[in-house]
Image (cartoon, rainbow, N blue to C red):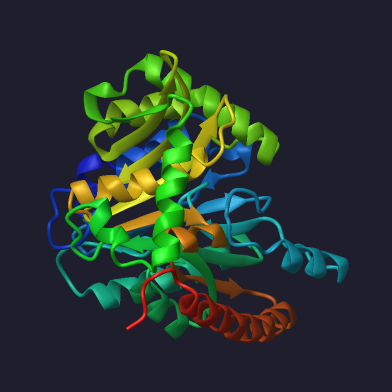
Length: 378
């Protein structure tokens, strides 16, 4: 990312709050992507070697870009292709290295084919899609994977021959609520009572909640949060992806785009969740704790996120990957999208057949879950 200046990267739509015409997504900002690299989280040593695609106009100015990485594994992506890799390599192929057009360790949808605010965006996206295929050919990699892309990107990628994949997340939609109580009033009576009880019990052991952002994000606060992150990450996944330096860097560069929801008991922080603030969306990311209390995870990660979104007029809360338990807490199923270019014809045909069946299954599951949303009927 150091090959791009912050100013020129900021001419691409969605990368900065200065652009009001395209919703700001903090994960494709120069500050976020640079922090991943400078902290050592996304580097050659961790299997995320930056191969960011750059498209220039005749005058040499940046007109488009794609955050892209050369990878020798499939960790930290949240769109799982381990089965494809295993099948191809058992058949005598070589799946790694591959190209990954994404934001490392971040299962949040956003622009991937970044285009300048001037010019024909669709034409630029098509050029970027073809550029990814050309880069794949030049490097001799097996495939290109564009994950958690926006639908407008998917349209151009599929036109360029990429295979379309879908999955599911759960998002909260703020329908102009004035308070959390207004939201509760839209739920069925039994669901409303259950959430009220859950929130009471989460805070019953004398736990208080604080929202920290901007100047509140001191190094001492990051020390506490990182301890939570390492404890939970170590128990759940075995090896957390983000290091302590990363949090210091984003805290310095993006403090106003970060919300830490911290739980305090007996004068010390015991749990917390980090969120990033976009133009109209709150993105829930990592959670951790050093004390286990019933329902505290739901309070810190989901209920407090809804509270913050309503208080600050944000339209959506994206609560991260997977988790059907979010449905009962007012988060609805949403389809996510990725696109895949497979160089080997045999593997491509097998993956295309698999994705046709998977898309039908994702759609059917979404319809099933939608019918079981906690909102009142009629």
